[in-house]
Length: 177
Ligand SMILES: [Zn+2]
Image (tube, rainbow, N blue to C red; front, side, top):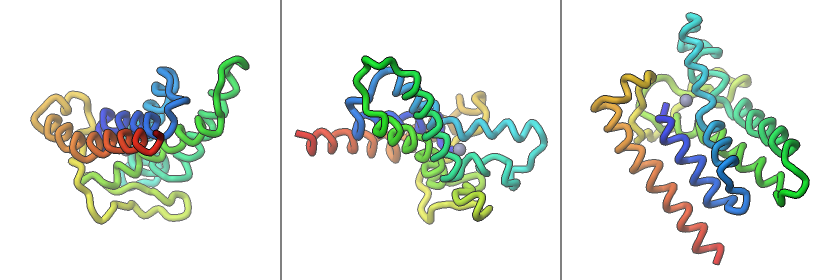
C-alpha cells in the first residue's frame, strides 16, 4: 500500500483540481476516507485469511468494481443527506468520490512491494502491478511507519504523489482562467 498520507493527498488533489466548487471540509474528509478505505481489508490477516486469497489484503476491496460501487453508494447517501438549500452538483460529488476510491488501487499498483491488486475482481483474480512501480511500499503497521523506512516512503510519495498532485491543481487553475 501507499501510506494513508499518499492516499489522502491524491483524493485532496483530485478534489481541488477537478471539483473546487464541491470542495468543503466535509467533502474533503469523506474523499480522504474513501481513498484509504480499501486498506481496511488488512483486518483479514487477523482472521487468518491468506494474502493470496481474493478475500485477503489487496483482493476484492482493491478492485475497480468495489471502489466504484463504494464511491457511488457513499455519494448517494451523502447527497441524500444534504439540506435542500445547499448549492451542490450531486453528479460531480459522485465523480469525485468515485475517483478518490479508485485512486487507491491505482496508486497501490505503482508501489514496489507486497502483492499486486485484484483490480479486475471478480472477473479475474490475478494480482496486478503496473509495469513501472516507483512508489516505495508502505509498512502495514503504524508502529513500523515511524522508522527510517517510513521516512523513505514519505519522501518517495512526496515525489510521485505530492508533486504530480500539486502540478494537477496548478494546471487546473491555469485552464480554468
Ligand atoms: Zn491498499
